[in-house]
Length: 199
Image (cartoon, rainbow, N blue to C red; front, side, top):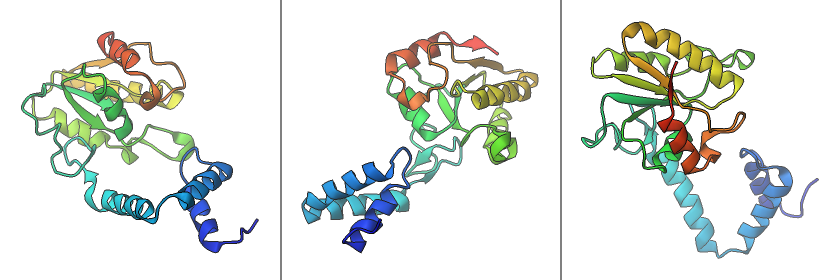
């Protein structure tokens, strides 16, 4: 259905490509944006361009950052002997909100999913294994989402890491099956981290 404005239609089309945003929601957002002052729309557009221009990936942990290495990897206050492995940058944000973890992170960039053609080679597994060679790591915490793909990836990583003489643990139950870490409350994530188990 073509709206009376091609400009409005273009905004709706772009917004509907966002995750969890359907066409109706995109239309509501576009109409709401239309009612806002022009300077707000310009500020939003500028912030999006800034984000794309300034943010890259940390060469150490693969998390999003504006500096390389990122603030977490370069912090002297973090425990350099523990690395928490997560799927996506949003998971780092979720764990950091708990204020209960003081180690480092490693972002895989997804999970093994043969149905979508994603194997270990498409993830940042090689970079994780390279980090173990420095000899400073004592523990790797596998904090992947409790899905079939997350479980498969957890088992694969445990198999790769165990022979290296590093303690491999996983976060405990408490994170509901089928949910994503970024949507779980801080207390649940904190309990899961505290009750992690050896894999």
